[in-house]
Amino acid sequence: MILLLAYFPTLYKDELLYSGIARYHINSGNKTQKQTIEDLFGDGWVCATADLPTHLSALVSKIHNLYSSEQLIREHTLLPYYTHFMSQSKIEQIEMLMKEGTAQGAVHASLGLMATKVKIPKYLQFCRECYAEEAETCEPYWHRSHQLPGVAVCSVHKQRLVISNVECGTQNHKFEFVALSTIKKDQCQELNIGSSWKDTLVYIAEQSASMLVPSCLQKNALPAYKDSLYKEGYLTPKGRVKFQRLIQNLRLFYTDELLHYLKCEVTGASETWLHKIIRTSGEIIQPLRHMLIVKFLGDIINTPTSHSALPFGEAPWPCLNKAAGHYRLDVIKDCKISRCNRTGRPVGTFQCSCGFIYSRTGPDQSVHDRYRVGRLKEFGQIWLAKLREVDQTNLSLRQKAKELGVDPGTVKNQMKKITDTSSKTDENGYKSRQSQRSIKGTKHVMEQGTPYIKGKRVNWDERDSKLFRLVKKAVEQIKNLPDPQRITYVSIARYSDAGDLSIKILRNSSKIPKTKAFIEEQLDTTETFQIRRLVWAATKLENTEGKIEGWKLMKLAGLNPPLKASVFHVYKELIP
Image (cartoon, rainbow, N blue to C red; front, side, top):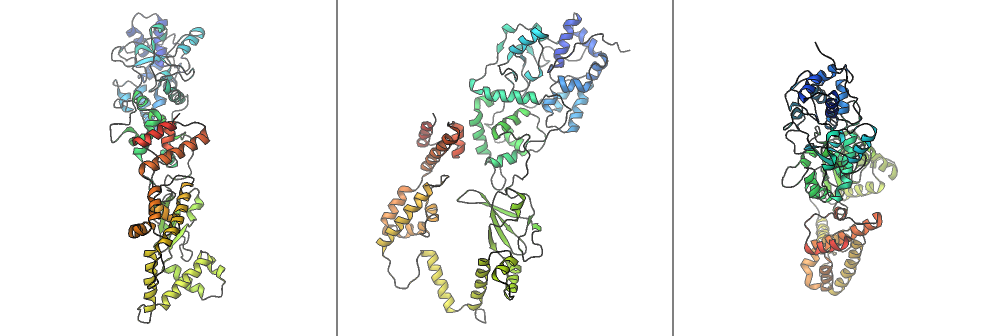
């Protein structure tokens, strides 16, 4: 026969069940802890577990169903914190272990807490201000929100927590429930934390407390890390995570000291918790680490995402060959992604089996971008056959272009190429001598940057002066770009009309001394380009935020430690 209890204390908001049992022990007048455990559980061998207690069904039956097992788990244990991103089946499995009698440590082992470095505090913690307020209105009690991993401040009063001498584990007091009111609070010390950590620790305390909000235990949506990483520039156009840069910036953001305090270091291992939590789409067992990523990247828990982390979405993609029967149908299975040298944005090249190849600069911002063509690279035989067909009609040039899905200029150019190819080939398929001479001249223009005129001498002084003006103008253009770009032979050539400058300099460097000297003076080394980026980033931060923080300066400038001495000197001068 089960003997029912005549009394069990009302549990306060955010109170640990452990705390309620400790108060019962004092109020009941029991002389031993064993007697209290026997009263409440009908078994004197139930351990005094603070965070994830078991045998709850037995307790509920003893207290006249004053509370249900689900209510005790949901409102007076730490389980909701650990199951915030856990599947419903796993939650039900853990709940069953807590309701029924089980081997010591089975719940912790099932949650994966035995192997992790991130654990609850060694000793129970409390807030002095909470203690004082509760002593006046009711009685002090142990709060759930003060015992969570990484929590060092009170989420309500934003004050540092105090460490008691009561251990959270059961190793040294297996059957002892200790009430907060019995603790000599003046003999307890506050947690020793860095003054610069407060904002982060308050964030952790508030977020941790929010995960304990009374609600039906259910799986919350996993955070969209890849989308946020892509927005912040930590994904390559092909979807690979730039872990080295991500880790370095995370360390700059939090400091190694704070990460060590939280047991969330990301140094000394090639495969860290950061790698695992981003690569694995499974359940998050340690919400603390999730919070650190969220704060670093921005609040992404409840941010809906309408696009893929890939710059052009998922395969397949539509063929945009208007001459083909599969026009706008998703038949292209592969997309080759490269990076634009000038802007750094991803460029996708889509090749259909019909021979039609097009590309566009990404990333796609909406579903309509899937049907946008940036550049046509190849038309294919189906399109060319359609071109010949429409060319035989009486349609206007604009109507022909509309029929083919291109602009009128493209129709004219492609018809000219077809006509030129036909006229330059005799009936046996051989190219005429005139065509070969034309090809030779064209090749010379491409290689030398000047028209092919037999026997003509070059005036190098005149060319040096002309190139100097063009190069000087190109360098000024590069320096005035919104975002810094490295000054190289290639970039100078791109922003000038001087052809392949690097080849001219290498072949004729002695003949254009003025241009050569100017370019050598302006070319960026790795250090000078890094300094230009630092100065640009500092100016931008000053204009947008009114202050310059070291980690933000490094992130915006795209630099990673360690810096060269000359660059570091400029960096120190820019930081107030």
